[in-house]
Length: 274
Length: 308
Image (cartoon, rainbow over all chains, first blue to last red; front, side, top):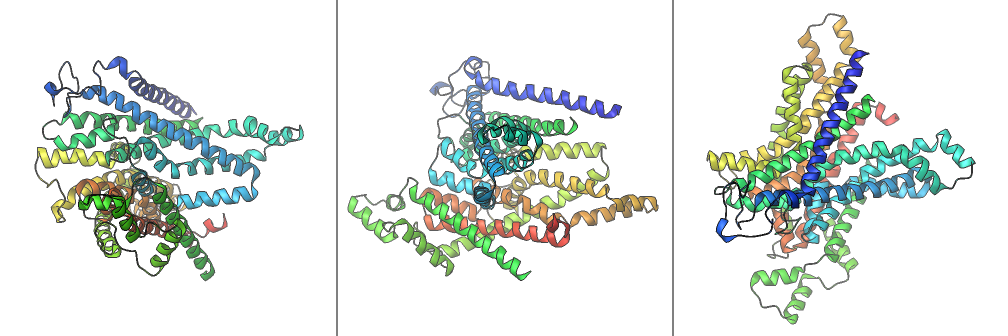
């Protein structure tokens, strides 16, 4: 008994630490303008490929742009796009799942059939093909990844709605004459929010890998916009002369993905021990 | 049984038709004109007349549904069409690329499965030991590394700092090491996790308790656990097949490995529709067939799944 309480406590502490780390990453990129002195897009002919120094903490790239500023601003692009994509898939998937689970019948069969078919697509292969066809741009990269992302949310929301629908409080609400929209919003949605949100958190890491991977291939963000994958891809060409131009965005990517992946794991643990 | 298999095949065909239709539609509505790309790459001055003639020749002026129908019919006959880029038949191109990709994917899969199996089993058998912690940290970090990033970092250390391997894959063994590493590292992260969980599940089964009670030797119990965990290896691979496919496209593009992924990356920029369509169809087929087979295998190995 004592051991279980201590495990609960340990998970809680981990959760707080990871949440704080994740938030600080978000805030670092959010306040990029305050933290970084240099303009991430300002090219400078006299300071091309400068090694890290006082003025340029992470050095400069091939065009003399400050890498420190670009890493911060680039993080904003990556993180904002990831959050937006996960949120949109979450919203669409949950609505579809709730409607399917609540009403059942033909809509349910059709939409779940569509979900099965979508699950049949290999995600990254479809993403590369679709992003390539739609042409560059963060929007097409997001669409490309989103095509297959909504499915996990829809399935999860559907299965939870299924069990909530038959619960006594939903039956009571129905007898009280509440309409379907009210029951879904007030009774069903809050009860499935926790598991579906957990799923959303665990998707952040993979989505980030996908988005920066597409940018790395030149299928995401269009240069000169700062984005980690694109920066690494650009600087790869002169890695021998200016390794810092590759190393810092790489380290930023790795740390961010690890933090968000670990946060997802810890939240799963937390829900388990609670 | 036969009825079930026929039903499954019909299902696979339906999914492939929908997938191909969807990509075809996307190619149709997306910006970028293959005729224009081709003429520009040949250095022909673009006038409306030349452009229209080229479009006519490539069959781009027909209505959408007619084009899709014609493509589908020729694919059923085994003809993937003619490349827009260089007028070569698409099928041999895809075949050659696929062989190279298979070689790369198979090598990476064997390497990462071997490593993961050793690490996953030994860390599960010694749960909470130092080894277990180290393996878990490794698998967590490996799982968080995008493979394009591994490629850049490995390139930096091995090709530039240490100068051991060539930067561009040439097809020989030396050129194979880096792409295989880049594909394997993230995969081992996932495999180790799954194998470790599987072995831990087996260790909680009644038969293990029974053997322990009968005083069976430890290594003999371990052998049994390993043998029973092996039954799920195909499922574990099937789950990762999509990641492996996507990863190999990225890695082939980076190392210029002459596989199907590099072929499709080149074709996307040239708007070479027949090659893109062939790629989607082949990759979709492999993915769905592998997943269906693993489902069926699971049901054969464990009939309880069917009943649930």
